[in-house]
Length: 505
Image (cartoon, rainbow, N blue to C red; front, side, top):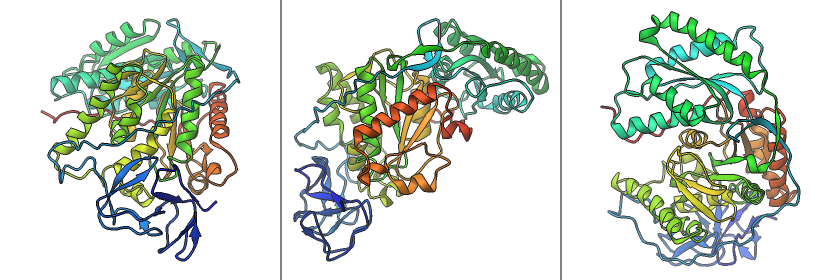
């Protein structure tokens, strides 16, 4: 197969391989060369008319487009996130054609992990060293590395990890509250056995306050804090911190694993470095995983609000009630309004230059492909950034599209495993939550094999279908629960970043 026509309502198709002028593909004579992953018109599209893919608008034709012509940013203009031309969010009238095909599996997936006394389930059992403020970054890192690079006993599943960040002081109240929320949620994640919070002493986000909130959220957890100004300076804090972490680690290594199931999973879904194949292979495969996790009693997080702009009408149709439906629409609209008020075209930021090179022409097209990773189960809750996930089923979390900020928000919400799809390739991973990388195409899987775990490009090549790929991902999650390290873990991708809401003051 040389190209794919996703839906009978679409007026464009996507090239699965580089196509040449004069070829006849899907009954259409090509008038131009079409790069791999890019679109061509399968019927004439008049200037000003919508370009349709995934049965939804991905933009409008800015000139007449003939059947067989290449369709991309030179002749397609997105209608959403256009602060350069609009003063308010455009209301795009279009019909919804939601899929009702919820993936199913009779197979029961047996997991092994660390059952916490509150019932939560960790796939890892790490000791986390985390600063409350950027002034303590170096000390936190030195404490962790002193243990990591010593002869102290560890295991792949029980180790010392740390993060750094640029927050915690000189923040407006609501920004400081969000910083604290992310730090607390990250430390409270069930993949963490114990945590040492390191603060300076004069910051807005105080280490002792953070530690108390972590303990309140997770009473079973080992939690301590150190304040550099009170501990006697940098070297004294490092000595004390090293002793604390070694003691926690020795205790953590005594923890025994217990049986679990997909009902114990809080699955984070993410796509980054997307290309036009992401919505055709990797994301639908992850959607299969999402459906089956929910079917078997687990929780799934759909995030990246930016990348729902243009697809929110489909997600809203799946809301369990009118209140959730309105929350979905409002969440996306509020995010888009922020873009509008910046008086800029969202293109270039999202979709990024790499996304565009990979064949994505507008935020709408990217969003319509992104939404596939959430499967087809009902949306049962809408949460704010880093808010704790408390519901079984599919939850929308309001996050930016930035890979690391989004991943950090989901982990703070309790995500204990993440599946991250990519078309261009990205090394991003969480220090505490196993992050499984799935490529949308075989080329990037081969080129970045030290980074990517699984290859959904087999779907594009006709070797597997979406259901088979989804089940392969589920089997990999089981392997991770049994101690298999993801590529991101092997590469020590301690990525952590907090969504900043306001200016530094």
